[in-house]
Image (cartoon, rainbow, N blue to C red; front, side):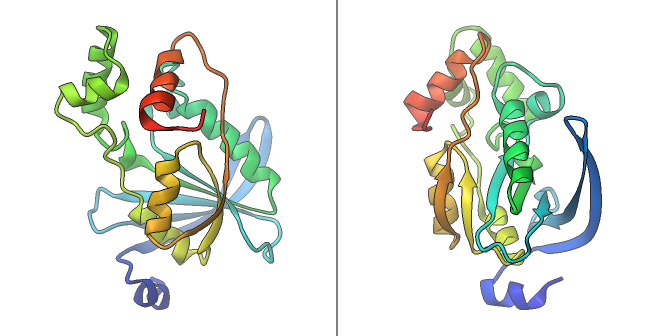
Length: 209
């Protein structure tokens, strides 16, 4: 545990595992620093992958990515999670210092896998993503970025360039003390399956699409 960082920033996290993770990215073998974290609740676990070519690089490019079983693993066409993750990784691997923070417990914008599938069933009947969440009694967006901010402090990255289309994510990290020096867009092409999903993010959730 990095006790100094925890004391200064009053964090309640512990990275208990660290390794070098070799991955295949589009046929290219890449070696990344991997750190595992756990928040106050045992279910709030996260992973940081760091691509570090130039240790002296001042401000890293960072993607804080909400986990999506249907998209990230099974490449669902109903959302843009998988293409965003791929685009973010491509950008991070181009940078002298890049970080991916992966938050599995953010599934379904924080409402969980079961509720996400319930909301999908209502979307099949014509609701958009916002109305479907409301109808099942779930928040429109239940995500909290406190652990992501704590991870960035633990990594000694208090200032970042953030890959996101979501202004609420920028504001949440800033409210947690992270200095977001630049918002970098991460727009991916729409498909017939996710056009309404993306339009809802733009028109009802203020995403910059």
